[in-house]
Image (cartoon, rainbow, N blue to C red; front, side, top):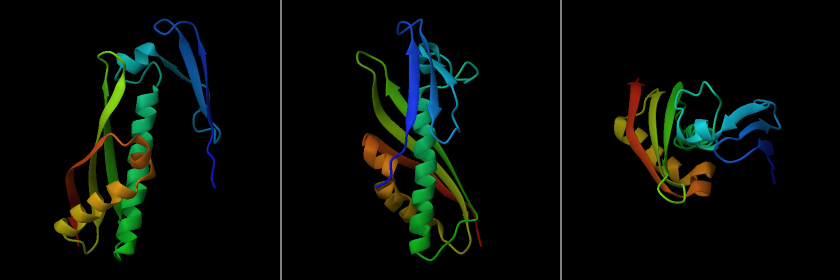
Length: 147
């Protein structure tokens, strides 16, 4: 069993407060976040937010899951690029309602159809997909180059 750790410190009220978030690995080390970076700022200059971190984690996890399924099918990607767009509904109680995953890959010897099926299969095995369980949509699946 693996355990991963993160921590956060929040000071002040919801809308005027600020916080810092850290990960045990040190990749995040007292990284600032706030209400403004959660709901207003999309440029990320003032800090991060939990939803952005979750989207990045989902993109990373999904890329690894696709790589695993590719390997089971006898393929190795030269490159997989994943963008995750997390939808946070803010009417009433905030709720994550969807995640759209866009993947492109450079996979020697694979057809477009094989790549799309593998990406679809991987969406069922990605650990973050399983944990979130909103509407996970894999869109615009394409290979950059097939050899």
